[in-house]
Image: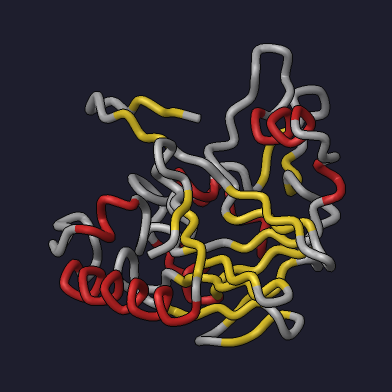
Amino acid sequence: MQQRTSGSLLVEIQPFLVITAHDYILLDTGLGFRYPNGVLQIHQHLIDNGINPMEITKVLMSHLHKDHSGGVSSTDPVTGQRELTFPHATYYVNRHEMEYALENDGKSYLAEDVAILQQKDNVIFTEGDGTIDDYITYEVTGAHCPYHQTFLIDDDGEKLFFGGDEAPQVSYMKRRFAAKYDYDGKRGMELRQQFIQRGQKDNWTFLYYHDTKVPYNKF
């Protein structure tokens, strides 16, 4: 899935679906685009791979920048009502990231896409680091944006790490640099080295949201 911005920057994105013994987990929600026939792209991608979008049980949000959260909710083209894109899932969102997104509506955040999260019962607002159902851990990393969080899914010994925009592409992991567009570029550089070390030790598979050429790997 690609988006071309007004500055001619081509952004490649790929939300991940992880199927475990317990859940159908979606990692971030993409841009929220629809095909001309009205079907949401992310729904169609799931259907094309044999997954009913209504079967998604968990939506884990690394942060709420619009390229990651545009698919959190959508406006029904028939009724005009805005609803969560995955109504039967439990959404996990950092509480302070939610507040920050609403306070900074504009270039990176679109309050229209995410404000509904505060109105629904199937949303859990996380704070700090923690664990979900004893097999998913989340950590607030705060480098790309102040309340960014990462997720590690340990499914019966198979460990999948989703770094969102703290580890967006394999090239970021292989080069030491501080990204100027990060909230704290130096911390982001340090975190990526820490992730590699932890991943090597515990045999993580890294999932890259912005790398369609190398969507996952191990170190």
